[in-house]
Image (cartoon, rainbow, N blue to C red):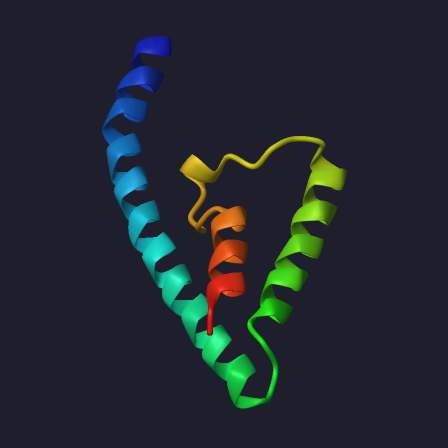
Length: 88
């Protein structure tokens, strides 16, 4: 019943949130690698930001809602775009 569902959620949510933090860290490392590879082929990391903006615009258009970044395994899209724009 409801008590079982609440108990299950209470025991699994902390683990899921901790794991999502590790996943975000790996995603940030992957973004850094992408910035490096873009520079190696003569492109600016700003190209990454442009693609992320297009993907986010499309996602919002299709879903009609803001992303739930606090439960996402990926860093917030806005932060990823900001990092790409700030990358050397």
